[in-house]
Length: 109
Image (tube, rainbow, N blue to C red; front, side):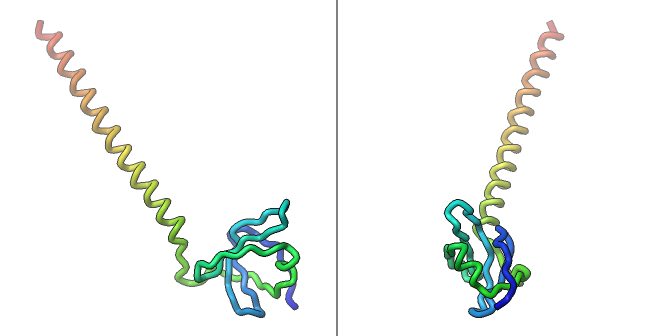
């Protein structure tokens, strides 16, 4: 059996016996549960006793791995933020133009 490694959220591990790679999503110390995600997207919860029985080795993120759920959310937030900026810019420009016109009218009288 290999060395014992503490489960660290965001880190990748290889189960040597099953030849499966997964990453730790979360560790609940109170309930003694480790939530993991396999490369194929399957989720599983392990109790800490089971975790410590596994023959694990830390590994690198698999090549070509894409966390599509996180990436999509980030892109949507960026697009919304950019849209908000455009709207704010348009509103500010319109307000400035109106003020300039009002000042010009006052100067003409």
